[in-house]
Image 1 (spheres, rainbow, N blue to C red):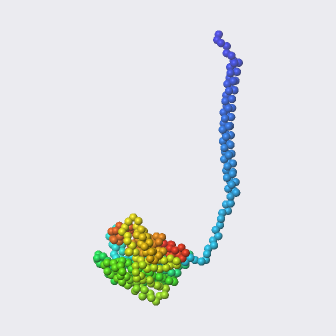
Image 2: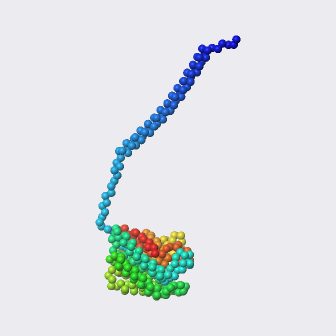
Image 3: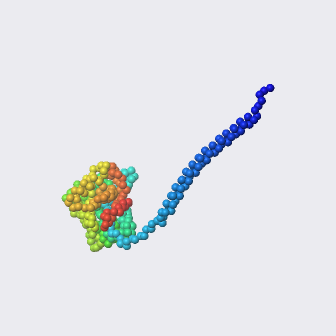
Length: 346
């Protein structure tokens, strides 16, 4: 017969196997408990950090600050400076000649100049909310007409130079009367400089430019018209420059045609600053005010006026950058000088 099975031995063996399983399970549980304990310690550490942050935040003063306005009842004082130039009232710009960027005629010129005076008063009233502005300087800086300085203008202009001067004369009177009625100014100073277009000769005369300018005559007619009005003072230049002190600053007015600029990447800045440096060797001015270039520029030491005529065939031919019809307005603050520059789009 076969071998006899050791039943008691098997029982002992199975018992040992069961004990090993229990030991393995106990080791796994102990290992898991260690992992869980480590995680718990980490969580407790994070919670303690958050508690510290909260305690620090609670220690901070979150009541904030309050602003107690102590506004001065005294207003600052400034003078408004508006420039009217390069109007070319009788010149025609046909839309198709300038890629439909602009158009111009004597009727359009009238509307744009009228809008200039209306916007001027509106902007000054805005500035008056915090500033006393009793005086206006209205610079008439030339090229109010186009004239016959080129032969083709005899064919394309809507009016002759004398007719154009008479036309602008009426527009200027209407504009000045509007300022007198609605501007609220105690004083109006009008510096006048002739341009290069309003001349009676084909070639520009250097030493006798005023005597041969339709605009010089125009300025005297305007001054005569307002001679009995004590609020208005005309300053008509007899030379190229016209100087006017405002508070502690000196303004130098001119048309701008003596500035030599033949184009270039830097624009007019370099030739203008070179000219200013030379002119200041004679009489020093804080700001140069001029037109001629048909572009609005507010620089630290000069202001270049735009043109109410806007973009035209000549500007297109010299590759000038198109600009919308515009004139300039700025303010001379008694304390800070030139500031608050405005472009009056027309």
